[in-house]
Image (tube, rainbow over all chains, first blue to last red; front, side, top):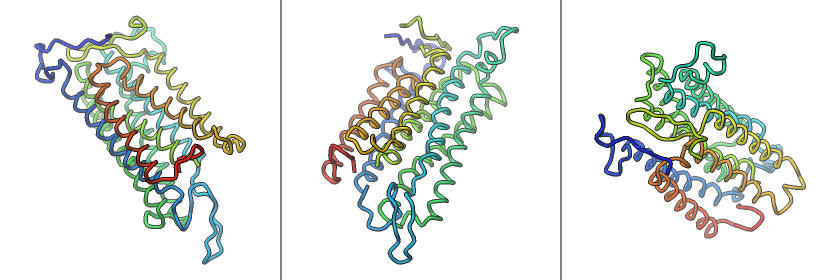
Length: 227
Length: 112
């Protein structure tokens, strides 16, 4: 086992459980486990109702409104969602870089270090990038939701609309919470500088953020790509 | 293996993580898999074939596992954390598959 934990009798030992593990990390993993159940239920609902909508618009097929004769194309915009998926994936990369920068804050960066080496050690930059990319993802989602509503798909329109907006809306709410959380960490970093002793707080936020990312990996495939 | 990973240490927090270089490689691999997924969506012969859905599910599962192992550090973390994640995840996946077989039209071709 390549893992070692700090002595439970060390300062701040009240953070450690009888297992020797930090109770905050145990808590976040338990929370993530429960979130798996939540999103599994939402994805199940979407998949069960998939293909059972009586009226359009539909996700992957064109639909002609019998009342107006208007033909609507498939409503999902794969190119746009692919870009937002890429942005969210890269935000996870920025998040691990932020965590690594905080954990290595005490390491001295040589004076002659190059631009990228100095950038790697800049936790503020990586936290800011993570926040910005999370906000960009939310912007894409707002654009998508708005265009869907303009094309006639609302949460009350059909089974697809109900299950789609519920699933992706819940995910968007999680991303929003993550952006706010990361924003507070960035504010602390700007104000007093996050130190290695604070790394566990960044680690917890990072775990949450990566979980939001892996949920989207599943949603992107199951909702957007599989017809 | 241990030598390949950076040691990040603090008074409260001592364990091994991948290096910055490995993080960049992981990001590149995730990008390539995403590009392949989207490419597969636009190949009509692939979409019409029986391999489309399994292929997408495998690529998605690979991305999921890579993020969990390397970015969430589950590969390097304590086994209790692994159990706290994989246990509920397994229950969730089994429940999802069970519900699909009970309530949805599941075939070898499609999930829906």
